[in-house]
Image 1: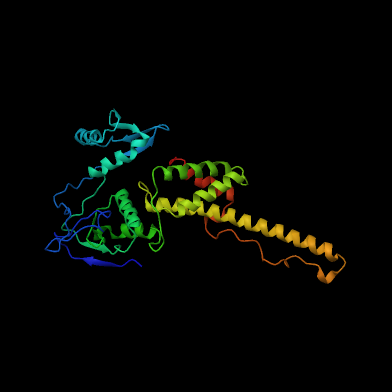
Image 2: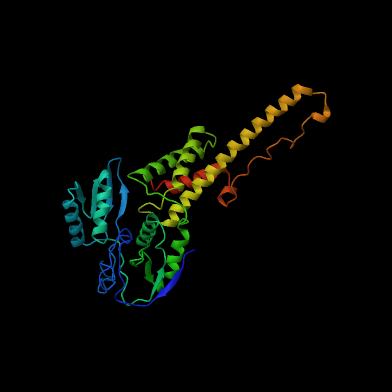
Length: 321
């Protein structure tokens, strides 16, 4: 259960990256050795560039809203990392394998980061006990939403009181912190979404294709165990996970029902062979041990036909693969 408390306004509030919050060391005055919130920081936030996949080997970062100096700063940061790049006006084209280096440069430049005003009334979310991977996911969701925040030496989250409702909505969409989640590695998320897209693209027309159904089950199982990936809003990721899970659950239910039907047929055949003339020994409908076939999952989307739900998921994935 997430606990919250009002935080008195103070210029001594530490601002610590959640990835470093577990490792910081207090100085003699008890203040975290970290970068303080900049009260004089500009109110404008440099927008994170939109990313477009041009091909299997190239990505485009759209910096059209940036000024010339900001693009020059980014270019210098990319040069320090020896990244091959081409500028097409305000648009940056890089190799697919360099995406993580570009994102690293953007983060180092503070792109997309809002600054928490030192004089703002603050609310503290006591998330220090959360797994680090989940705190990182929360920080990424706040970044995507453009919400200013800070982290103290207990790894608790500080936000402006004016943003409380928006943060509540983000936290509500986060996975249960008591569960164990893993961070995706490399291109794993992109590979999973591509696998899922290819599967539901086939299943929307032919819902019984075995290979496609297996791909949905495998992708849904893995997505269930992943923390919110970099670049995704928490609510957006959970929506994809839940929709994939709905399809997986129905596929699993179909497998169970099919197995029960096969077992019932075997029992009927065995009973009929042993004594077809003994009425008392004949099994009637509903007498087979094992109960009725498993019900499909009870959710709003699960009430729609399987093929239609597969099509809906495909439409959500088409812009991501």
